[in-house]
Image 1: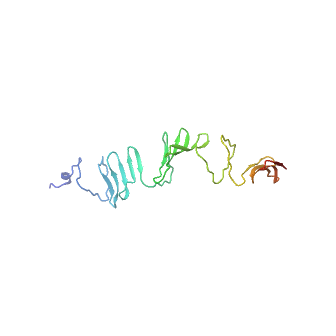
Image 2: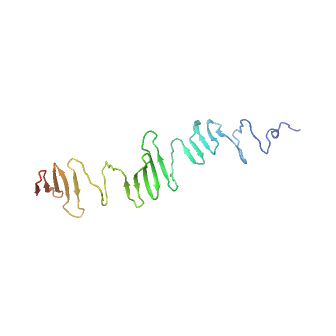
Image 3: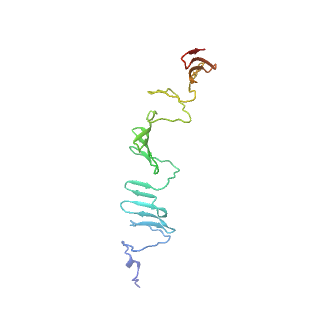
Length: 212
């Protein structure tokens, strides 16, 4: 008996085109050379899909919104990224842009010519540079609100200004005593022996000098 309404008369084994929806249930499709689709959806979640939007673009769309778009330029992600591993960026000038959609300035973390930079992209200015020898260059003023601890020498090509109520500089000799401090105290310039708690020289506001 010949079955004239067989699958072979509807869909040639050598290929063909479906004109409507096709359901394979929970069965697998195997040994397929290629399949041309506009999108792929899960049967348990109708609004989540992998979409082939054309122009060499693939979109992953959970809940109908594109969260991951892949094209020939790279990957575009909409939403947060959570990683339990490392993030490695390899390029001739690797950088990460940090763009604040509500305010300026915007910034960029940049590695270029052996330097690590924090760049103010809004004002096209380097704000902090870590040189390959470990030197750190701060291009603007540095406010150290919690104090500043320095190990090593301090070299300045400008002025040192200390503003405070009775500002003082401590000169502590780690090998010998006494230690000293210099201070502007109530309008008098004072050299103070901190080890022995004694004023050694005092230059008063009227100009006379007390040596004690």
